Image 1 (cartoon, rainbow, N blue to C red):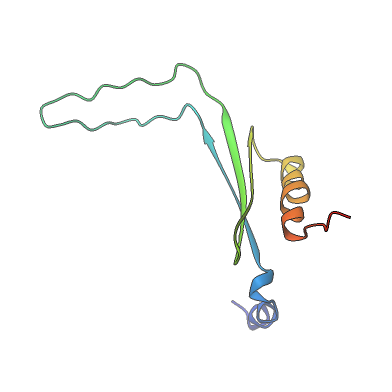
Image 2 (tube, rainbow, N blue to C red; image 1 turned 180 degrees about the vertical axis):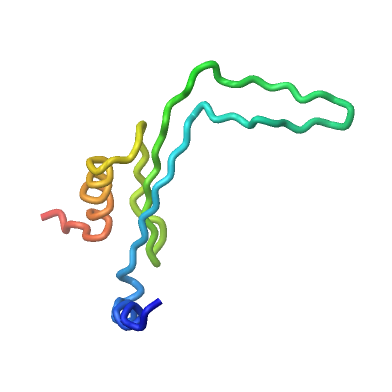
Length: 98
């Protein structure tokens, strides 16, 4: 990494850093292999349909886990902006209620 990066990041206070991560899962996901006792067969059932995609977005800071956001579907610009503006920002800058 360049020395300019380290100079810039060195000026940022640790408490001001927030990391956002996104992941997804399909609810119909199943294991392709199973385990059973020796000389026994592993039986199982799997979903008949494709299942629903679920996306999870979260943020973490030195204060802990912030702003969990879970929804059906996939992440696009609209979903990400909704997460940031409606869920994360109010956690970072809470209003006084007045």
